[in-house]
Length: 253
Image: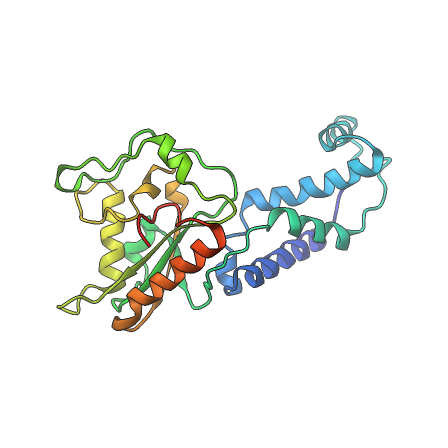
């Protein structure tokens, strides 16, 4: 089965709009959630629908078509609107209880030094832009602050993992007594800790044992100094009420 380039572009655009509505974020931020894996899964779902019509497993149908060099031969017409609905139910099943509208950034930690991170107080969220089950590193690459090894046993990481969400950590940043800390300073400490420096940011340290931690994205939202902590607490409470536990890397509510 083949589709035109225009149809494929429209299909991806529709999924982008759907993710933005589902996650309550802007369309630009939603681009980070429409990954190569999810785009590939679109084709898999359509192929599965074709195979279902033919009474054969999807992989058999696809392999047979490719081997014969006849991508459209003997394939029933599939209603794309129906398949889009099915795909949205299957691929974009993640519904975040935390309102991420107003968050900006959405950059990898390695990009933070050149990103326009505000020095103001606020809250931040770390997301893993895939729904695939995680793999964990046996040893944490994070820094040993005050000589303490940040490594967490893999069995514990597996037990703490929260399926059905891409949020792995929720944090806050206060301006501090000097008024010079804020999001920029706090996130830089977080990044440096993950890069192996002995920096005091042990909160969220579990994220560094995700095998794909370089792909993690961090977004932030400015708040007043007096509301950063309460906003963080509310976000964690919303997450916990929905998922029944804390975000993967949060150690306390």
